[in-house]
Image (tube, rainbow, N blue to C red; front, side):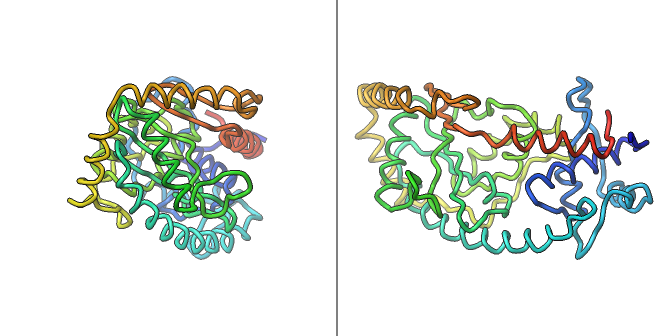
Length: 316
């Protein structure tokens, strides 16, 4: 049955319903911070100003109580109380994984042509499982993406932290590379907006600031989106020593012949990989970006989201 929600109530219910697909209850502040526009696809994407006080007021209304519950500071759909313990458990797991990942990033910052590293996915949301890997977004100097990717792959393999075969737990998933000239992400949908809103920058603060500016389209879907100006506590700093190593490597490996040769080899391997051609896969391999998502999670999450908002009777 369709309910007579106010616009803000629709946004709040949609937000809680969307994150329910991640088994992720939200605090009032997080509801405000990650608020989703239910009318973002209607074409009228004028900037909105929504305050935390307005969200708190809407949460207190009786209408919301028919579909939501709250406990221990979290809000969730009725009957989903178990999500609180799940989130707390995943938050503890994520803290340990992030600590281990930072040690790997300390090595990766020495890789020639590497300009930024950011954690994405469940780890960035602090919603990682014990058996999950580490999803990364890596930014490479323009004109050297194939060389940079190869060097990152070799180093993570040498460190025993590259995901491959059945070796998944606490290993780096190298599935998304872009260059400094292509910081605006290709897929501008709700899943991507969530992915890059949660992104945790681990190296390359200045490039991360540019990344945020290039992806301000997120605000069309999430009206409270704002640029982060405070450096992350987990950010690994660049030092004189690491700059020297990276610079020396770039001087030795800057030849166009190397980039062209690696591109030829890698494109052949990608073309031969069966996962490249399976239905629903997102594989893009060009000089501006290298994206390897044979089984994208976005469509699955969105289908769950659609089912929930239909059940709740949320309309534009």
